[in-house]
Length: 485
Image 1 (tube, helix red, strand yellow):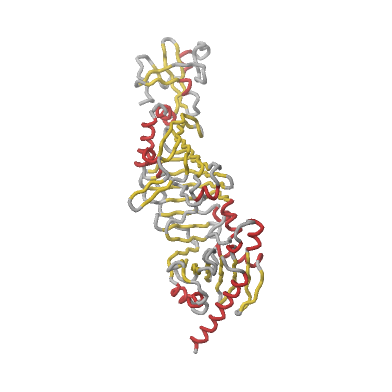
Image 2 (cartoon, rainbow, N blue to C red):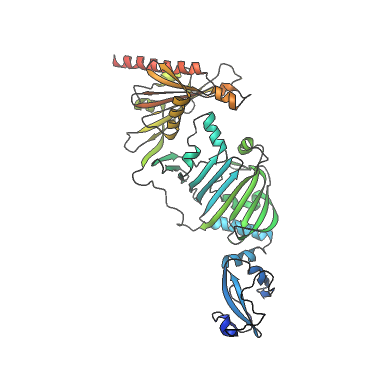
């Protein structure tokens, strides 16, 4: 082992230097600590040469004393992690890449504090990932200009920056917990629903790319460096091809080149920097000249069983479970307010056979989302969309819509009573001049029978949106009267 010296000379490990040389005077050649260029003593060990002055610069030291001839030297030994760093930096590039791949493929999972930055994006979170598709993200900070713009222009973001900061999201690959400790609210959503900062790109807790570096990339050795007071090795990555296909699966690479910095001791990533490619969703929104940087600190590989247990919301948390619901089932839940025929008679048809419902375990509180669409009269225009949100509980998205329609919209009269309409066309003209204003959202909000309703239209004018909602409820009253008769 590197910690032991195999030298045919006397040495002591525990005797203080002063007791060997006398308590008062010491020879000029005695070095209490080897620093910088004070002493260059090349030591041959297991066919490797280590320069002790370089090792002594590390802050991770333990003391040892060695007698050389008539002189005593106290060496500042580096910690095992730092010693391995210097050993691994002597690996060839091929050996180093294989070591990184072996580390990634043999570990059960990884944990790190991840910090993602790009112009307009600053996200920091503790992340865990496992080989069973499990990921857990605890957001410390979430600032995204993209998400803020989406909320301003459309108002239908599921979560916004302020809600994500402090949120915990955990997935097992089949469902995802979204826990908001500030509201003591937890929603168990279907599928993988981690809120990713970069559109169309999974980055939080994603380490699987390390397993196939040699297969996927042309790699250039960019030399050694120091990051976070650790010895590192920098690799230049360029995809061998923009796309890679396998049976029933296709993989595209979101960048044309990247720089990967690896800890020379742990073989874990310390930093990844890249610029998105032009044909990637991220590149289309952020551009292809802005660098995206992901930094990892406190990284460690996880053994099986060391990863966090399946997430369970704390006691006294209001818990909703998401499931799929058909229009007929939604009609049964809100029989007096909703009929499928009322929407379909206006030319809208379900975009998906099923919508989504979030409901408490006792079934007393729920909120539902259904999507509808219809062809525009002008074939040059995009299809018109309708997102219908309703329930007897205000989700975070519904709560924000309620506030914006009441504060920024206009009060209107419908057949059933008061309502509010927020036409975002004028806002689009101010913020997005030259863009097709026909796609500006129009949102109508009303309350009926102790439930909250939101009709979010795109491609529909404000006047038509109000008429459609008014007609919908006029038909609802007629239908109820017919059912009673």
